[in-house]
Image (tube, rainbow, N blue to C red; front, side, top):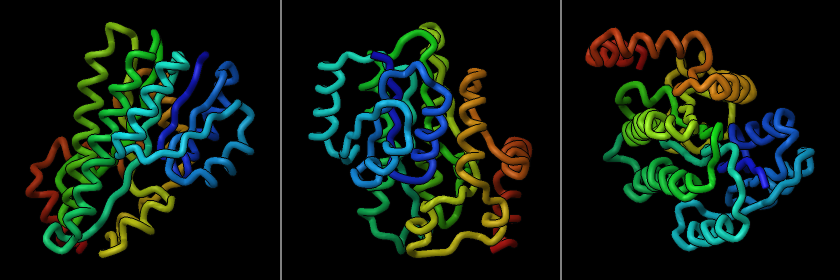
Length: 253
């Protein structure tokens, strides 16, 4: 049984991945949708042509993760693509944000992504793909977005290293690093603080991010960066010292 697994599938970029992959991969037996909100995934499944399996779970909960491993063991599928989209961010100063919420970011964005990837790897075959949702925030530390940027830096580093490790098995990993995307993300992220206006000006649609990510993944690229402003930002973070970029960002604030 050939399957695609999409986490964070109840909304935003995860939902968009499920929609686009459904149109592209007609040979897949099932798409497994993973998120906490079952009703959202049930609505999504009605829009898909491929048979779906809805797995309502908290990917940070060890009990659910063990149940997921048991399901994999029973079904023994060939995972042709794993798309890890589950994650969230919060804006604000570290000292003013809730400690528990910041630790939750680390658990979901880093620990759960790593564990799900690890548990899926034994079921991946030659020419399988892994897509990990990072962010342009991964390119350098970000004031008032410190923990989120750090978690996405982890995702980027982990994914690029894993891509090298898996090349002998012909499994390829792409880290997706968009700038602001027009999803529900900001409804949570701006709970305690507002993003810079310049970031809102560079916002793109989720379908644009996902379509480019799928193309880059097909071409075995280890990083996918959507839109010219964010691509330029990526280049600048490689050319300029962080201190210079910090000073410019402070001017915008």
